[in-house]
Image (cartoon, rainbow, N blue to C red; front, side, top):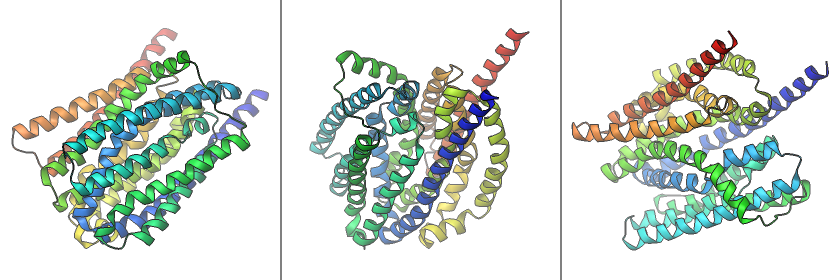
Length: 422
């Protein structure tokens, strides 16, 4: 009886965490439905494409600054959640490593600035985005995930988004004001950073303790596989917008792709609360039957949503982004299979594969995805099919291939366990 009550309490905690993450997701959806259409109309496809290009570059910065800590440090905190001294040292270790990485990134950015690799407008946006992403990287989300307190993350994220939304509407009035888009993000992240560390001190009594060199090195070593995996994944996902920016320049096509990709990103955002709350829960409980039930309930809803968006892709893009973006509907249709597999892909990746001891295959899958994407881009260039539509088809094939590989590894593991039982 006690075991059942304990399992029920853990399931309630999982449901509570998922609920708060969905509060965050729904709020983000609503605020995006205000800011994205506003920016696409005010800035126009070409200028909005520049914003998308800047964010594409920042995707790499974000992964480097994170260095896999969102997974490795979360697991460490989860395993030592009652040890406040350990948590304090982990937070300090992550902060020190991220500051060192930020300095290296700034040096690289200065080099690109000196050789004038970026346009003047893009350079200013990237510089401000760098500061914004550094502030975001210093937020200890891994701690809150490790102790399964998604409420704090949810409220803070919504708070940041509200600040960003208000500032965008106040400051961005035409194309000349595009610089205020990254400035709004920076201000929101600065406020969040202050209140998060205030919360750590007042509610958890955590004080930063200087870690030893040995602890820093151990954390780095443990995080490297996660870093390589996420870097490989982000590399091929963010590569498209950078290539399109270099290929099409200021053409509206970059804006079409960026706006379509926003909708796919929203699908990923809608799926991540389930995967994020399941990850620490599954590390502790390994309740695979619950995962199966969730997928049986949710996948039919996702399937109907994808079919609906596929049928009305052009009107949806026109409604959300403006009549100039009608052609983005064709791009969106080619990317929609990614939205269909994103939830099972996320759940298989870490909530299922980590407890099974298959994490190395998750990392390998992202490297395989990177090889498929880069190899495919080279083939498209060689055969003269290097355009937006074939690139979207290739991206969809890459994402599906990654999912199939992960699922295959889980099924092979399951078959091996069945044979051992016999």
